[in-house]
Length: 82
Figure 1 (cartoon, rainbow, N blue to C red):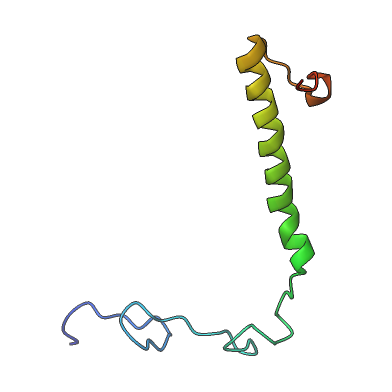
Figure 2 (cartoon, one colour):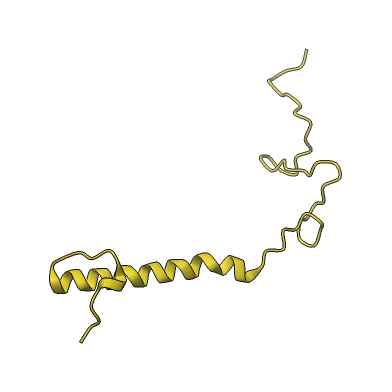
């Protein structure tokens, strides 16, 4: 009889809780392999640029609301600041 509740799960753990190992045929490191997604920096920056534009529009809406007391969603309908 084996003492304790130790079950073999088929992995080779480097340390307790660190049992990740690549599947057969998958590289240890993804960078530089055929599995590397090679993200284009321009594509990655698109989201941050759209968030900056959204924050600028929201700032215009809030400034107009504080000035006039009415909320205008369409930024093109907000009169230019004098």
